[in-house]
Image 1 (cartoon, rainbow, N blue to C red):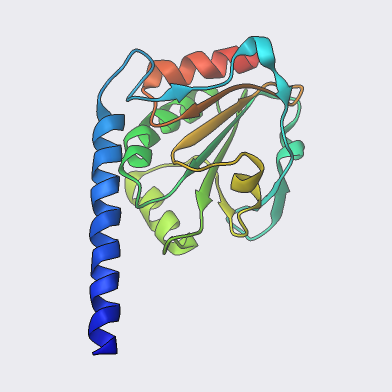
Image 2 (cartoon, rainbow, N blue to C red):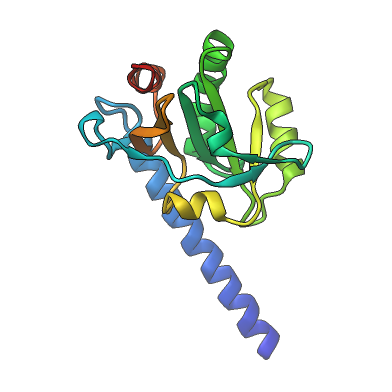
Length: 184
């Protein structure tokens, strides 16, 4: 009896999660002026210093956000199981291919909810993405930016100030506009 109750609770939680994910994705996938329902919450007039954090690169080496100073930096929090994240990844790849030497890209995979480095590598490799992937294994990076929904992107200028924060999937023009703003 106890196993049946646990199973029923797990199924109910899964159904609720999937339902919430669907409605969130549905809302985010409706195109609006600034992307796929993306919400920009930081303006250039209110720049604040970017909070430093440490993540792991693909070799397991620690990398700090502050190591990226000197060039504009795009920090994107994502996961392979997130449909809105997947929808914007091709835009990041194109931006990386055209701007990779001028802009730092920190594509941070959140290692939570069943996400693994292997899943991230397989997904990125299968899609032909060549941008660098970092891993937030401890939740430090996402915690510093109070990431409660993904994708979330933080745009940082060369001096280490946040120029924009976008919650939700972006289209290519929104991504490029925010990269340009960080580069000024």
